[in-house]
Length: 167
Image (cartoon, rainbow, N blue to C red; front, side, top):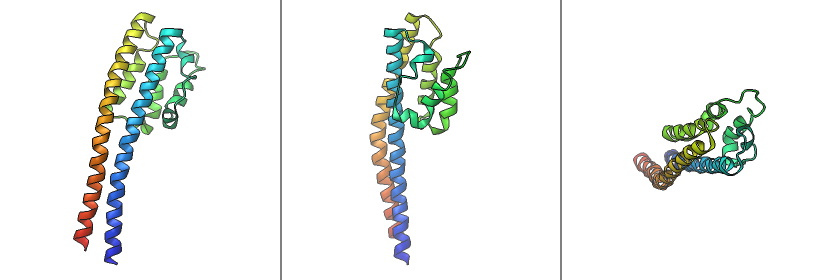
């Protein structure tokens, strides 16, 4: 009976380490998805001068769809007064997003400059925010690789320690 309890404790600890690593991977996927959206919006504004209301509905990304962000963003398409749709969509999907506070703030500030100035100034803002978030995404990728190894190692070590102590 003691063996079964020890093995269960070991497996629980090990699975917690794997789940923490999985969460880190999902955060990185969200960063990459938002970066793709940033580039898409920058291209829509720069090349096609697409209206803000219409540019979002043609973008599809499974990760952002799962969080509910894209649906919330497109839900405001038929609003008569189209103001702060980005901010509202972020607030509605905040519980589903795994972004850190600084990453969330970067995404929010990107959306704050869409459709609020002339083309040239807007493109400069979009380019700046895209470049900044690209650097943040690269940093997140490196951090993810380290953290996944750390979480798995900690999960295994804690589980092994519990196993040894119980036996």
